[in-house]
Length: 451
Image (cartoon, rainbow, N blue to C red; front, side, top):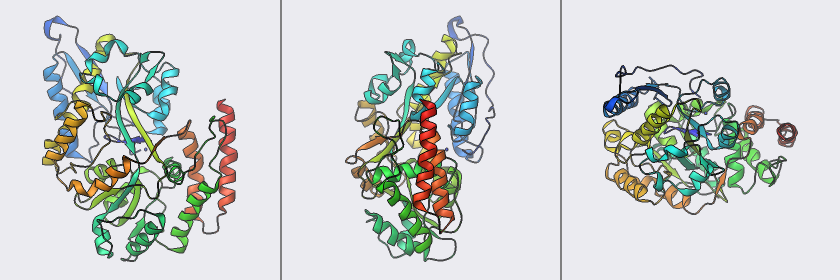
């Protein structure tokens, strides 16, 4: 899933079904040296509900245009950057920005259909292109041609509210490492009073299936057969995922009574300070604080409970195939400035700290231990606005838990698995076996149609 640094992400995940153009300074008639003036559109402007982050973005746009006379940047403020409901229609209709975000699950489809520009001649516009991890660059390369700039990489852990842990008599410095411990902690947090939810989970908007995938991976299961042609989630591991959620919801009463459907619903609940735990990558903390008014000091993240593997995903920026060479170069220069430069744009940690952002959260940057990666890590720690130690258990776990990529046709599968997640969380008498069998039938039909 799309995540936001973005993510996702996730990554991913949406707040708005349409994109609206932001303001931009008027273009100069010509660039320096008489070069042709160009206008580019770029994705991921922060929403109006995050005014400080939006202003920082607009400031970066202004600084970029000043440094690149003749280039006009127009922003779209769809958040999160990737919305599975609008992505396909926008792409098919040729309405994508000059620079747009694509989650790893959609790389092959977008590249295969010719919906991303071959940027091989222009990768030099990304000054630290050589520092990007080779395995991530390989994902956006086909037949020796490059189609994207890796932007985010993540693995999943357990995000938790340290303040609620303390109130519930739990030690925030020793978060749960097993699902049994998660259940016990969730019961104590739910026992704090009305409105408190020990453990939050999604049930729709493709996010329910996404979290099911995270959970089954952690238990050692998988979504598809090895050859990708059959569903494999109707398994002991899949049943264990749903049974655990059923018991937390209906036996422990630790998950609240309100179904949390899409990405925003759980993030709002987490930001309210009354949800104890949820699955997520480190940028969940960033989004909860920046977009949903969570207290920066309250959150931590630890390793995935009993993890045999952890869902790993990411995203890249791709360029609209209709872009002219001048537009492609300008768009990549923008990506380089805003998303790939130490102490600038999204990596301006000093500015982030001044805005009250949770600087210090590990973000699994796509630069690994390269020179850029080390410089980013040093700057992040120097400008940290929260105790880096709060995230150390996650850092240690992420280094040892094997990553596992999202399945082929992930969004379609997530939509199918939403039904199973919603069923077990909304009906006490729901048959887990039947929910998984129905999902298996639908998934196999979809896979057969995809060929």
